[in-house]
Length: 337
Image (cartoon, rainbow, N blue to C red; front, side, top):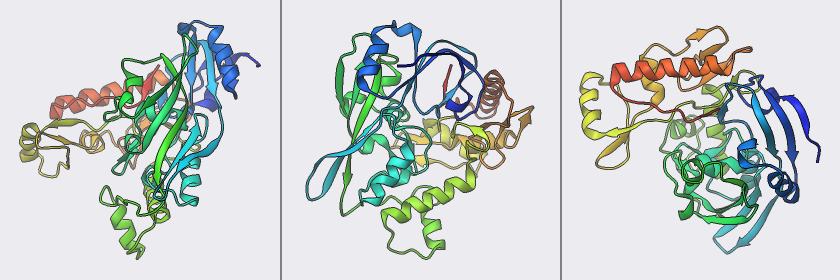
């Protein structure tokens, strides 16, 4: 196990922010992970996955533990379903493609989401009508304080919209080491009604889509709207789509007839945060190298030399404007450190 000092984390976060880690170690085995956890108190550790859902506003005066556990295997299957276990350090999109190539359905709508497998249950990642909670069978976590393993079934994860027990009661208490997904082998339930998936299928003349087709459409849509982190630093969607009472939405819709929404239930609707931000005039806004993407107002970007604190300040300005105009609070989906 090699522990490096004063390492730049620029290559390890998708915003491309040049903050430094006091100590840095890459973990490729469970035994090494247990060793580093045992030798440090939890408050002296910073667990790092794919670096795709974080905004680093300062140097990390701790030991940064980069989780690189690898491996994908089928652990169980029957005539209809397959249970696939992926280690935490596997790249999420590559894992999605691995499953699609083998005809395993259920996560095709989650194609091209940046990050690693280990962070998917923490955030309960989602896109185009599908969330990880829909397919997660269980995940295994290693206690940071005791180094004991614990298996969390779907219910124990306490999933909610971009939420889980790992962001709340058990925050900073476990390192997710692997995840088991229950996927379909046949009779796939395709979700094409969210976003512009159906429009893309129609445009391409696809009337009986496969899971590969859905993945291809999602990739095309995301690439047309979202910047590649390798070209422009970003963390995908910076804000959660707010969920508001139907009564509040109806009052706002009377004033803003083009305001879109997605029904949650009889009492609540979800409003696209990107639409709200666009109405404030922030879409395409830039101050120095910190900005709002010109094609998708939900995405904050680093055009090169921005500091995390500048992006955080921009985020606060956006939140303030949305609150003032619409009376709606939009929360950051990205974890800010």
